[in-house]
Image 1 (spheres, rainbow, N blue to C red):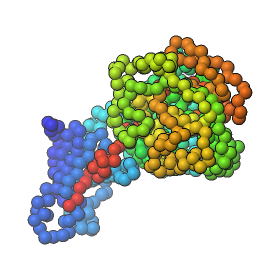
Image 2 (spheres, rainbow, N blue to C red; image 1 turned 180 degrees about the vertical axis):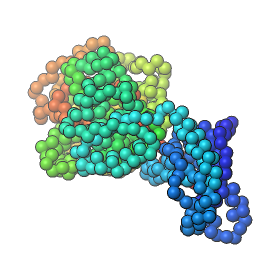
Image 3 (cartoon, rainbow, N blue to C red; image 1 turned 180 degrees about the horizontal axis):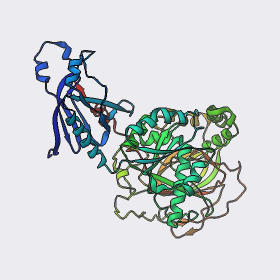
Image 4 (cartoon, helix red, strand yellow; image 1 turned 90 degrees about the horizontal axis):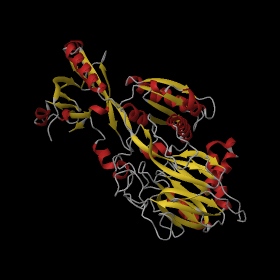
Length: 542
């Protein structure tokens, strides 16, 4: 591979040692010129000295002239004479990887007697950073002060705002006053032309607010009728960042690998971008909501319904409601119609998980045999144009558009689900004993295959419809089932859907997956091998 053109090359002091520092358009590197001398010496004090370092240009946060910073030699500050000989200095802030997918800001300071040389390096590095046009310069920030443990405002002001300031990212901050404040403001009042991105500080519910506000406005501006399940929504043209401050933060876990606010802030600063699938949910030709993580009927819908009555208990209400709902053991009859994604790479039972740059997400949801982006399902003689039907009694019906991993469920509901492959994983849990259902739930907390049970089945799909009760196959319009009136003779009563943490009181729904409808400030979870290799991109020691 051809070496990139070297823009600058100079010698500087780093921790009292002379380094050769090189700058290209894609990377900043430094190399200890005294390594050979140190290796030939028996002086063990050189054992842990920095010998080399490298950081990609795209992961430099900022560069600035260092004032009042003296180099240190053997744990002691330099003398005044030594400091006078090295009055010029500049500091480079960059991203350093730690364990558990955490990113941290790190600084390296170079010294040299010639101040104009240092200033030239600062201006040149800044010029190269300015050429990275994917980086945001202006952000609209919404803070939900009631998210999670009610620490969102403190998290932003103490841990995130200083990073944005260091990276010269300007912000306009709005602390939401009540429910749907951010949604309503984005849908009507916000002048989005002034910003390069929207950031929400809070939990998954806060992200859902921002998502609905942006997509509602986008569809209105594009002339798309949201009530039509047949129309494809227009993609949103502005990226969204999430600073996690909620209870589960499953969207951050699925897109970044952790719910660490500093890591998310750094992904925003460097301008990462990753598409995210969005599901639209309709009931009888009426739009209900969008979903990006999970739709749950039966168990998860009942847990959410019960927890809403216990809001006074705080976050512990979810555990209490989960326990009481498990004991109640309600099952629901119904019929699921779904369109399998038969021409995509990967399946819900894969051991290979969604990672940064993975093939299914890179294909933008296109079938393997078709580059046009349109679904071409093979007709099935037993079903209409590839649609399939499953009827029965279910404890839970879940649709996971991402892994839905969180601290309590490190693998998530569907460990192999992808962020932007244009599909969702439909998980059907048939009626079974308390013990068997507990086995299924327990596998969410470990690495066992949660689908390897006789009463559980999973399908990777593009669309689905659910009708409660004992209804037979509906009439068809073209290549999809049309709405119809269900019978009312089934027992027990209908359940409710949980849609990204919001209750849907309509049981009969139609769901379509829309590939890459919105862009996140994220790059996907970095593979562990590559993450470990880059865990200390700036320094290596001997």
